[in-house]
Image (cartoon, rainbow, N blue to C red; front, side):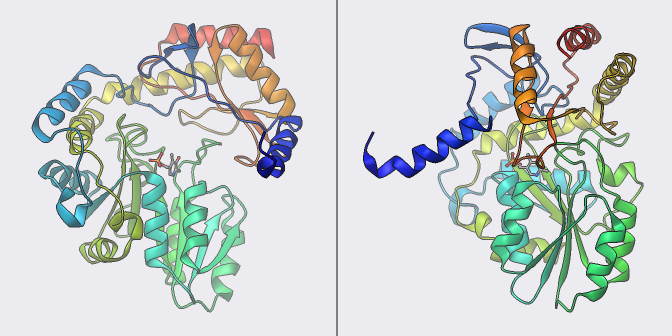
Length: 386
Ligand SMILES: *Cc1c(COP(=O)(O)O)cnc(C)c1O
């Protein structure tokens, strides 16, 4: 090894010793319940493809058609010549789906969050964030230069005094809708009331709620019977329930126009391939109209929770497709994940810093592509291993 990298190598060794070293498995085929990993067939419970659309033939056909109509790449940023009619149509459909004046496509959720927060807040402002918010939201807060104030997870009693005492020019409250590693929901009605009382702006990242929650798949806002007026800034991702790739921000005309002029992660990057946007128009339609996907998912979740309760497994307080089993110790979580893998079940161990110290877990997720029998198989292997 070149001596130049010695300090890096030492840090990697420390991570290995702490069971925090991360590696990639190579999946040779499409996303789905059954994967071929390193030549081995496994039953997977760790994707975010909640509606089972990532490998659904009509979506794949639309991607092919999109490539035929628009080619392989967009060739430029949206503000140059990369904004195609496929992007534009998808934005209009996302605006209608979320009941807002406008929607703006970003290449990823990470970029939507960092770009939006850094555009809407700056020096002299304050951004209030749940401690368990997704890394992209936290990073957006740091990038903005505003004062970043984090409050205890889901605790309205913690955010209220922060807002009351804040002398910031502009106050922005930011929260995940469904927390990605816990599966629980933000106390959205209380956040809305709090934002109104303190004249703060409220931004919701519903990456894991859209497509999944609410009778029409409109996510946390539909689940809590809220509306666009009370949650003025909505972020959604397209790589999870919608099965493709990308993200969007939806809201009022003025806010979206402001983002187009100012969000650096929107301006200074190549537009996503239009074929992806074209395919997403199909998955958005399916996500809205194929109610059976959400219903089947709820049946699988109920089946799992019932079985897990019988086995006395350490379930967390979640009714969403994210059903983590809390393990605590990092090494034990890694060992359990390995033991499951040996038995043909793929579930990743989620460790610090993704989750707080001492709260390592097995993050189990379900998709509409799973069957009841597959859930039963998972339960019987969990019983054996735990
Ligand atoms: C996955 C996720 C993102 C990032 O979205 P990508 O499109 O994968 O970059 C943002 N926020 C939350 C809550 C997420 O779970």
